[in-house]
Length: 288
Image (cartoon, rainbow, N blue to C red):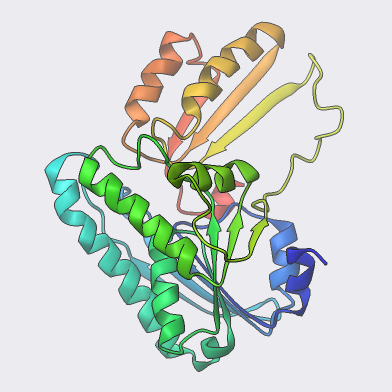
């Protein structure tokens, strides 16, 4: 039985993540069967006006929803480093208050999609607030690190390794992430059970027969706008597609420290009419 089909029988589940997920009918079909499903969507700290959303559903029906203003910090420089602890304190407070509010979490699986949230899940398991912790690894920076600061990058590696070793199970969005963890230290980081569990996003409704020169080829990049996340590959690819197909378009949804840089890259590739940078969009329905 696959991991996701096993979810059908999972009655109590918590998903903690760094931002609202891309809409997924597959994930909804699974979580809507849960007796207790708690989604903790931490607001993006680099976007002003962002909110952390805590939503409780029972058998697919929303029972409560809380919206908490998320802290916004500078994107660059020493002030960003000084303010980062404030962000993680916000994470910790939200998770702690949420678990105290609903006693049912003691029997729940805590699925963390960020290393910082996995740390909190491990702490909650030790205190008896949750039953089991799964770390779902969606990205990893093995060489350059996540930040410009060498000390922070070293700390990032240490904390990643700690999460992998102390979670009850580790899920990787793809095998390359699993291999990257192994290569960064020369060996597997732990003997915890590992699974390859792709992120469940809805596919394009016209995926079959999509490549036609007479159709509008529209793509969406949804995520953190930073060098190393993929836009430096996607934008040159868009230029090649533009030369081959009549209509191509890319929507970039998200903020990040390199947003203005990639706007200039798109302009230099003569893609100003083919790429729209929308910034961060809080409302999931608007993204759809």
